[in-house]
Length: 143
Figure 1 (cartoon, rainbow, N blue to C red):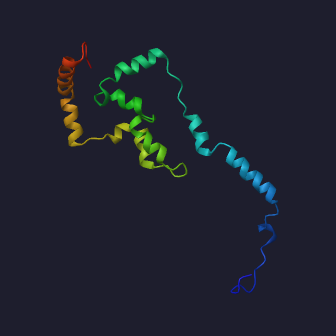
Figure 2: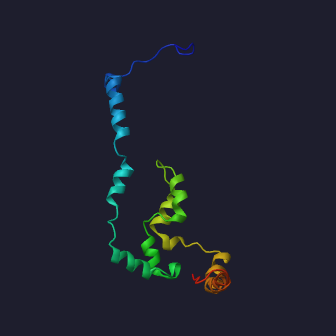
Figure 3: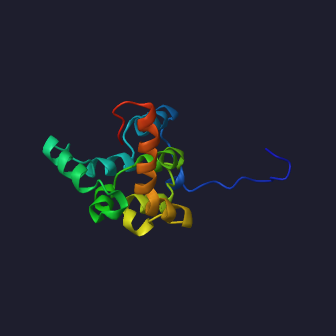
């Protein structure tokens, strides 16, 4: 007993855990092996697989990407390539609330800077110029 402790008060019997270390270890092992609360919740939100006609329809309706309102609705709840690194780095115990919101509500978290607005405005022009340059070097080139 440390020198500064003179007496250790007895705990009430109701507060004493009489279970064996073996049973405690078993409970811990069961908890580790079992699915977490988060994993169980994720099962409720698993999306059904899309049919080929559904995939085709979504692709056609979202070709214009951020110019299409359907594009944002189709991204809701999906981990997109632009968010994957953040998802893999967030804590499972305390996931980033802003990350969850940006995945669940993509329309409310639109990314826009002067550079991205400029890029969107001149994307078609840039594509035509790029196609013109590349078609000189590659037969049948188009993008």
